[in-house]
Length: 113
Image (cartoon, rainbow, N blue to C red; front, side, top):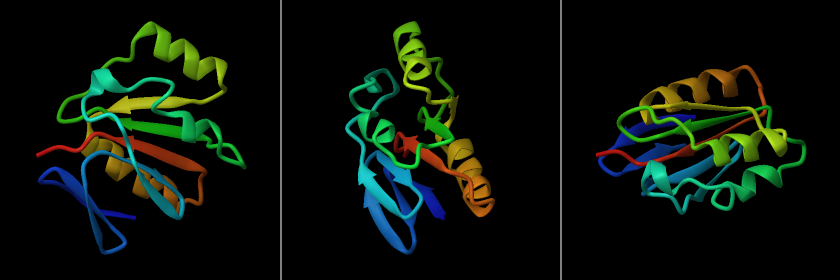
């Protein structure tokens, strides 16, 4: 569960991490994008490698919601990944709810101050 976000990082399972992260059920990885416009199919490659596949990818865009480029939107669709773009706080809260429901969810979260 994501316990806290802000101050440039996140607290998950009692462990504080700085910067943007990819969150999967059971593990956290650094995320190379530090701003919404840096999110690419390449930066999300680990999401595509999950087995079993992720049901839903939540994208925390930072302090405000962003809209994906057409290339990103089409690439996600072609890869069979359903993605929902929202601000980082909403993505954290939604991730926790879906994780509690035992859903195969992942989150790509841009850190906020």
